[in-house]
Image 1: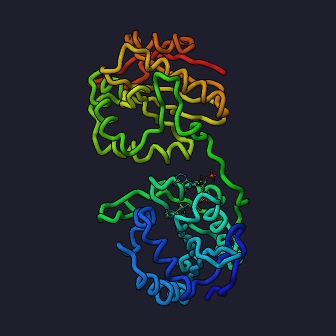
Image 2: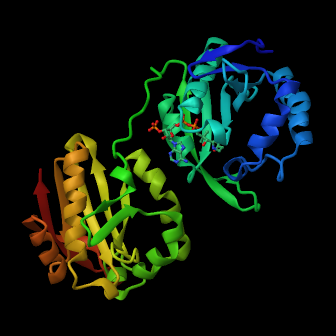
Image 3: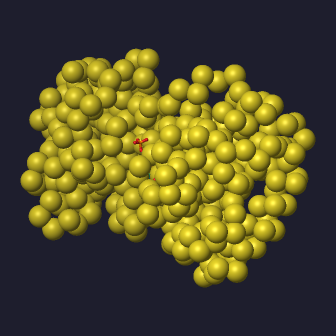
Length: 365
Ligand SMILES: CC(C)(COP(=O)(O)OP(=O)(O)OC[C@H]1O[C@@H](n2cnc3c(N)ncnc32)[C@H](O)[C@@H]1OP(=O)(O)O)[C@@H](O)C(=O)NCCC(=O)NCCS
């Protein structure tokens, strides 16, 4: 059994739960974010659920070799959240889980608590601690990165939503031998969540954009430029929108909605992909719905995005590739300051087993 200690964790202290915590636990667990991302917590959480957690579930976990702590305000003892580690698996590995009460969020409480419980659990002999979180739970992914955890991949269908459907989880882990340094995101967020020049507004693609995103993917010339060319699948469009935040945070891709700044209407999408940090290079790509074409939206979007990348990331060179017959796209790139570099023969798969040439462009900082 792990020792029932009190652990100092910056803005909070971690201590075993007690009867006096139940009112605050019940109030916190009525929060919709906790219900959404911790689907095994009872629906319509009551005081009795909190009593059962304190006296039965937390007790059982401690007896089985796990540890459940309340994150408490060191001055008042008030509950700020809960953090725990499961009993070790057959290889000695632990798993951390946590939530923070709505009244204590945004103050670094979760990051400090996860860091402190992890370091304590390593001292108690764990070689490795896993941390699993929903692909859409960006706050929790930031907590993992801030607490020195490394992103290892996606566990497909490993989670369950409250409605019983399966969800993908991001797998993070920290080893006892890791430095524990906080992980910095390669791509920062847009300032105040957007880039705008007053005509277009760029915002990170979000789950609510799925229907609009899919509508653009179904436009015939957009379908033809997919790699490989072909009709999109709505499940794939939805997955792209649901995972855009995660892919941004992991530095894999910045996938962005282009909106009409005047109306907020979704006009298309633009991405920074193929991000190669050692080369300081990324690729820009874009698709616009025909209703918004001919108004300079894409040129403005490319300019906004490339300028942001040059100013706020270590990217030095942005490349683009176009079909040799795609004159409108050539005009966009020329106006956005790109230089045509070369023609690559047979680079991309075309319809019916054919291959398509590609013109390559670049713009450097
Ligand atoms: C996720 C949660 C634990 C974060 O708690 P917190 O104490 O507010 O987190 P912190 O203050 O330590 O914030 C850590 C980082 O996440 C960011 N963050 C917090 N909530 C966020 C959100 N909803 N969306 C995006 N980023 C968020 C913070 O800005 C901070 O970023 P930084 O490190 O770049 O400065 C809390 O929102 C929560 O309890 N959510 C519901 C339950 C849950 O998801 N538990 C985890 C299950 S795996």
